[in-house]
Length: 192
Image (cartoon, rainbow, N blue to C red; front, side, top):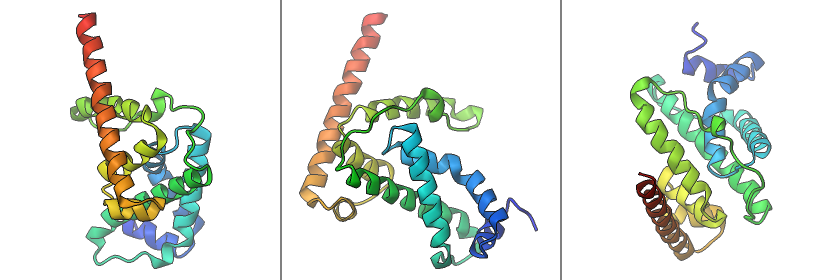
């Protein structure tokens, strides 16, 4: 029995085995935190939200279904991402979508990638820094639609807002990001 086998780990979690729950947590902790960071920028709050999401995951693991062993990894990623997003949104809703206090240090943005992905990592870090500057309502819709693949209907249902507000917030977020990118580009040209 290989402990790094996702199917074995998921089945161990379904059996409520603390050893497998710990293994699962260690394997997916960074992934979960990255998802939560797109919504919650205070490190301590993000950790709490992430941990709450893992509790929800473990409590609902019995309803996790998969067709084949091959599909388990993708399904686990999708399911865990959705739980983390919903848990983040729950906190933001509780706070009435007020801006978060604090920030993410650059070290928390690090993504373990191979050397071929260094450019992607730099672009990702730069983009996250720009998205952080968006007002909370715009940022949430942008993250849900562009990064996490939610539809406007799903966003409107999750956030309890009209679909037109979701579309409007996305459009405004894109316009602000373009403005930020143009400002950044102008600063780079001036410094040359």
